[in-house]
Length: 338
Image (cartoon, rainbow, N blue to C red; front, side, top):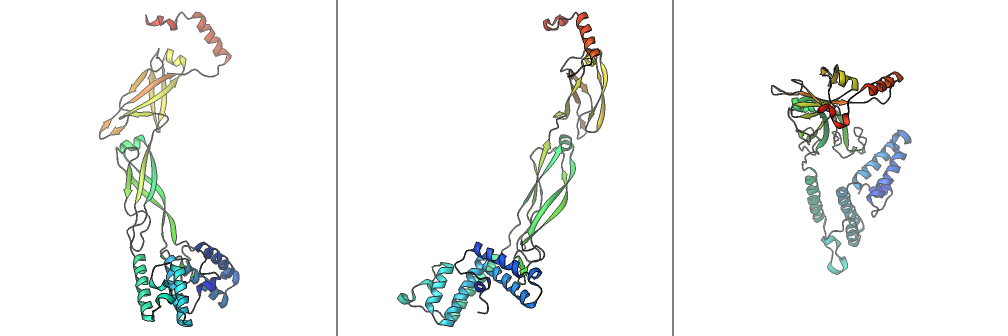
């Protein structure tokens, strides 16, 4: 066997994957060409370290390597027990290799080993090449009630993550860390999508953009982009079907004398006539100023709320005092309604 990957990394066969990863990172920092220089020895050493880690960090590759390494020791030293013991430690399988060579004998030739190893390797390679659909990506879009009723197009930004196109997720290329993904095995990119939201959509409804999710594995189909539509009710108004319901505050003197006021809603201005002696909670309907849908249009319903200012000038206070002196209305007895 040309290379002993355990010796290259300076680890033991019994060491855990986490230990091997820790040792590899320390060695990679020491022997990286940016630190160790661009000499042939440094580059060769760095490639050996990456090659060793690529094998020992993969569960299947490490198991197969341990088999081949154990058989190499057996073929070199002529000791069947060393192969059997190593096989038992590395794979913990129930194969005939782990049997006690003293009690039941040990009969293994090169062709038998190659046949068994090739079958295992080909099975694993076949399993690794099985195509798999990429993961779905989930995103939210927030729209207004008007947009939900009428339909709208929205642009969203989505972070897509997929298998690195250069290393195929293996993290290494020719024994070196993949330059494309920096050894992560996957790449991420921001993409913009224009999403058409149909009229009449409900809060919580989902829109699916097929094949716009994460990249499939081994040629598998891409995942989907699943968008949840959130219909946000405004603090400025409520809706009832196609009607818009809005509360508007007025002053006491506007309620008594009447007034022409202007309100803003969704960038539009509406003129509202407040009649004299308007009561708190009184409703004023603006016909045809509601939501438009399928050639139908609702109304805007204004709910009047008489609001008292928190501060007054001295002149205003004196006027209210004068009003209290000359007023003959007993409001608590509803005398004005008799």
